[in-house]
Image 1 (cartoon, rainbow, N blue to C red):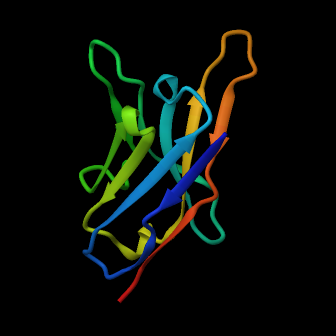
Image 2: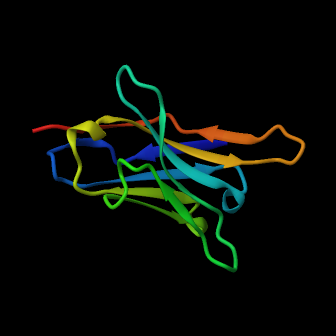
Length: 123
């Protein structure tokens, strides 16, 4: 099982980045996919999540701090999840982590993490 993030880097305030996460080794389409971030000296926080796709579609959730600026999307045939980040602010600076989560009745849940990709928003 592997999650590999890419797309981080240095961007000026107001700029945009698109993070990608490619997944290998598990049944991707069944998983809730999430992006977390961790800034220096702070706890890891949930940024965005996207549910598995069903006949009724899918759903997304965002942290209040990124609503209207970030968009999470998934491409199950490509076993990839993306985070489009617009109007970036210095406070968005953090290491961003991709996560795949599958709740299992009776447990244990399945929970996989990528290695992280650094995003720095600075002029």
